[in-house]
Image 1 (cartoon, rainbow, N blue to C red):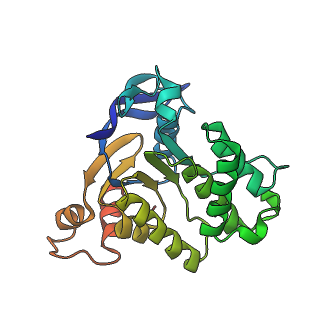
Image 2: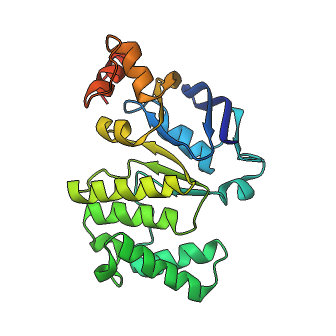
Image 3: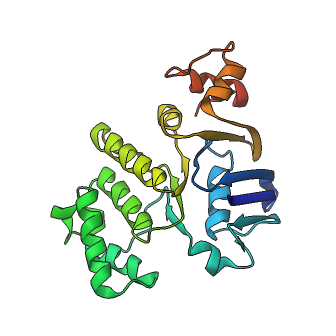
Length: 249
């Protein structure tokens, strides 16, 4: 089954075409990477998926729902961890998580239990009564991911989830995402860490200047652009990216 189907997605901001006709499918249960240099159109595409941006042309289907015409039903299936912090400055982090679960219909007692579980899972229990802006940058990122997954979404979209996260927590998050994906959650990841995409993603799309340039597994792309190597090695996907876009990530 297709979890996300994007057809001829175009988005114009005044005279700038941020998306120039993107066609892409993500299968249910996939761990899918979206790579591109700054300004390539990745965030615009993601914002279109989650309802923060309306397309100029084209459509995005989230399972059986059109993300533009049936926004509430479509977005109820998605958990989204944005690149920028979008949390209430005056709430404690436990209250942020509890309210997020409640917004999706979870009863209060269960919401509190879920919030406690998320705090423990992401190593934030001792910060439960702290306001988010008093956390380190890495902790804020972990909180955003916790907020995205507390509703148990069918699709999890992560925009730069490990930026500013230390190495130990980064690998702990990788392990958690692998388990979540193995349990059936479809995951879309944007990242500036090439090794992260190569380590986690089964398929990758490379976007540049609003256009989809390549799609395939890391091994397929490496074989195509790196002298037909039989095995993927760390750093090979970065070579692919440079050849496809002519730019550094």
